[in-house]
Amino acid sequence: MSCAAAWSPPSSAIGRNPGRRGGRRRTCCSSSSAVRPRAAAAAAGQQGEGGGAGEAPRLVLHDSLDAAGVATAHARAAREGFAAQVGRLTRVNAGTSIAISRGADLARAALCVAAEDDSLVSHSSVPLPVDAFIARLDDLSTGFCAGGNFPPSRAPPEVFFDYLDRYLYVHKVLTCRSGSALMLALIYSEILKTVRIYGLLDFDAEIFFPTDLNSLPRGYDRQKSKFGDEPHIMTSKSLLVEILKTLKATFWPFQFNQSSSLFLNAVAANHHGPGTLGDNQTRSHGNISAIEMAAAKAAQHRLMRGVWTNVRFGDMRRALAACERLILLQHDPHELRDYAALLYHCGYYEECLHYLSSYQTAMAGQSLSNRLEILEDEAVDTLRARVTLILAEDGWSSRRPAASYWTKNSEPW
Image (tube, helix red, strand yellow):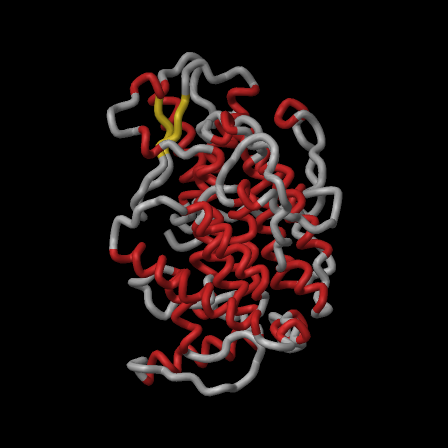
């Protein structure tokens, strides 16, 4: 599905239905302080109450941009808003279906992600109007319950969902007849929650999330679910994870080998050029083809100059942001490894080494099941050895990466 389902915010704030979300919502967040992960063990995926013994290194994106003179107030505020919603995901409600969606406000969390990414590339003095988009979403949800959009009283579940699908996919959202299945599922869940709040839902509704590119999320009566439906149920946490993994893959700066993994592409780019601090030492390229060499150099040039016109060439800022938010979700220790690969290219070697170590600690004792995992494991060892050698060099600490990586030319215009 090629284009996201669009929400157009109104020109002014729209009043909320008090029954929808308990009155006026808070802004995306109330603080602009840096968001830091929990202890290394927690960041490695050990989700639960409390943290570990020692604090992990900071998440570097916002601080590095600050050091380069790039304003990050709006990005920090959006990140705080996202982290606040993540903090409401307990073990129980994180695994709850989005059709019920207890704990975190998924719509606000997703919009805080959009607000941060917008701030990172636009540098607008005005933040993305999260509350206006929320109001639009509230109006969309309550609109289904009004007028002739809602099914007759006591209609069977099949009729209810026919009305809802027609309202959502024909009359409202899919104006271009395509959209992001993740965003459509989120909107679908918001409408169901509104109907439930009004007391108009008298059966156990569930959302079937499609795994192909041509289907749409659809509702069904959970009491009539079939064997095999369970993998198609999207939970609160899995929805946020899939949104962030999609953004991470979209903005990953090293995509020259689509058959490989994102991590292996980032490590392989180490052999194509310096990639971090702007020096021009010569490297051995082995059997790398001329086309691959040219593509790698072009990608590096675009990254250093911050060219943002086409996401096919990567976007280091938004790739880092996606990785950092995945770490906050404590989803998968592989996110620590992937984040470390980006930190290496930005010149944050100490932090890179720490996240590589945290990843290896989290993965200790786990067997490798296929050739790709073996290659990735070898690449982790190679990257760690490279970083260790860099840190052992005299005077490395005087070459701070922030000012050299986010150059004065790294603006999106």
